[in-house]
Image 1 (spheres, helix red, strand yellow):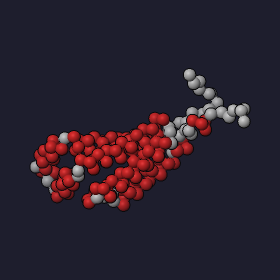
Image 2 (cartoon, helix red, strand yellow; image 1 turned 120 degrees about the horizontal axis):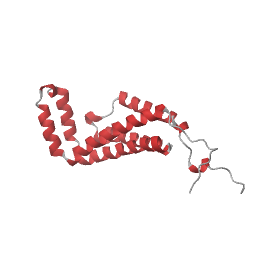
Image 3 (cartoon, helix red, strand yellow; image 1 turned 30 degrees about the vertical axis):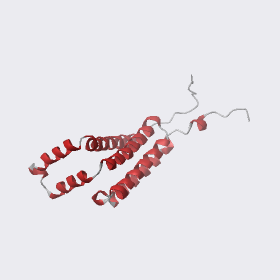
Image 4 (cartoon, one colour; image 1 turned 90 degrees about the vertical axis):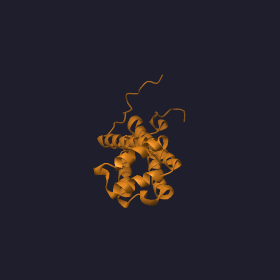
Length: 164
């Protein structure tokens, strides 16, 4: 059993880290659910979209184009999107819950994967705009600014021994 050393100061969650992580987990979680619905229940999603397109407030051209885009994505491409979103969710969760910098690396890997999937695998109208790319970079930099509040790996926190 490990006894906590009172001399070692435990890291604290800053408000910015908390806020970014919670918002990221909500966004990634909702995207995971959306993509999973599109993979697991494609007929149900197509029926729902068909009914929604008959409603007057969903009758504009942009909505119809968005529906066609989502219907044109293959199941395996949704699978790749789910994997990237899971990495983003897990990275944010590790950063917030464990205060571990490895979560930042998982999060960043997920964001790079999402960028590559949207721009190079799926492409078309789903490519990321410059604004979305800049926003993603800003959020990554904000997470990076919070790394100082996360704990170091376990070997860095241990006390030096006399066996040198």
